[in-house]
Amino acid sequence: MKLKTIYGIATFLFMSTYLTGCGTIIQGPTQQVGISSSPTNATVSVNGELKGNTPLQTYLKRKDSHMVRIQLDGYEPFETNFIRGTSGWVWGNIVFGGLVGLAIDAMAGGMYKLSPEQINAEMRGAGAFRADREGDDIFITVVLEPKESWEKVGSLTPLK
Image 1 (cartoon, rainbow, N blue to C red):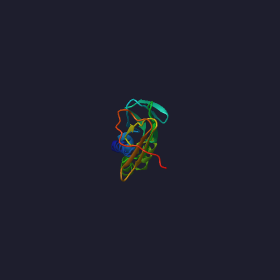
Image 2 (tube, helix red, strand yellow):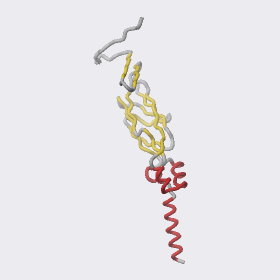
Image 3 (tube, one colour):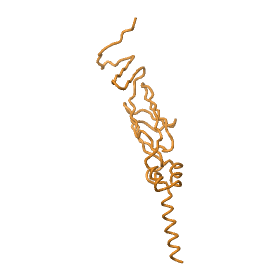
Image 4 (tube, rainbow, N blue to C red):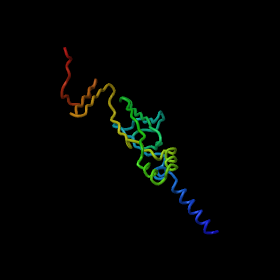
């Protein structure tokens, strides 16, 4: 009788470990992300909630995507997103945790990863315009009020 009890306890412990969410145990339901800006000391809001000033690190829930807004007086607001994607730990659940482990990670958020892990906002002065083009690496920046310390390398003339 004692042998059956020992086998029962061992089986219970094995199955409870086997059927848990791998990603939730390994990386947790939140992820630490970094947010910085140039210049520093810009105000950071995530999903409309004030988080502090740059540079900062904060924890965000893995199971949601998050909208980030960075603001600094005299500069255009910078907006971007932390996007939720599938973490590599989901494969560990499929192999070792089965459907129960996968369900636990999906509910807790352990099967997800936020991308990018860090945001660095290059703040543009108010009234600035910039156009980027991939391929030939053409960058155009138009500024309505140049700073005195800048070196003039060219100017635009209106078309007739």
